[in-house]
Structure formats: C-alpha cells, structure tokens
Length: 117
Image 1 (tube, rainbow, N blue to C red):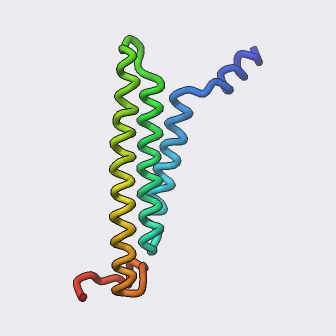
Image 2 (cartoon, helix red, strand yellow):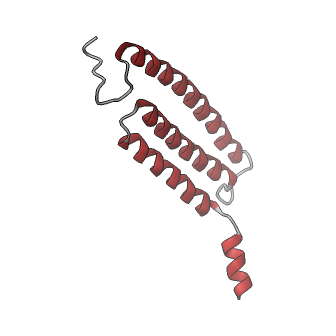
Image 3 (cartoon, one colour):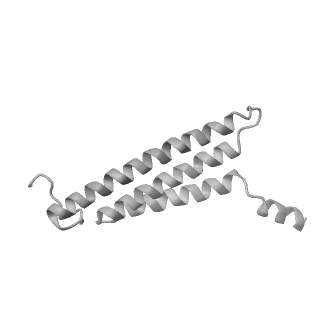
C-alpha cells in the first residue's frame, strides 16, 4: 500500500509539468505587470513564454491515448517557432530599451513619455 502511494508520488506525469508551467507563467505575469523597469517587464514576458513552451513540450511528451507518434513532433515544432519569436522579441525589445535609455536616460516605464521627443 505505501509502495503504491510512493510510486504514484514519484511518477512524474502531465499534471506535474502543467503545475510547473502554470507557476512559471503566473510568476512571469506578476513580474511583467508589477515592474516599472522595462528590462524587468521583458524578463516577465520571457518567463511567460517559457511557461507556454513547457506546457507545449509536456503535451507533446504525453500525447492522448490513440494518437500517432507524429503528434509528439507537433509540440516540438511549435516550441521551435515560439523560441524563434522569443529571440526576435528579446533582440528588438532590448534594442528599443537601449534607444529609449539613450534618449531619456531612464528605463523607468512611468517616466518614459514617448509622445514628447
């Protein structure tokens, strides 16, 4: 009896991955909405994207019963696209943050007013 309970607790399944994915996504959204610094907001958005990537990988690792093995590759393809978009977003956003810092000498989002150049 105790061995069965321990076996269930030690077996990592889809639920465990989704809990971690949801926690990472929630932490990223709290950081993105709570920070005033532009770099902190970007880090929160990256955490949110990583939470979504983890969920995609978990769903591709544990496909529904009765599906073909090609279903496992679909999650990996989506992850490659999300990582590509995340890398492009990070590069463009950091370039914009550097540009705004050069013009305004701050990255505080409350003090940046882009309509008054």
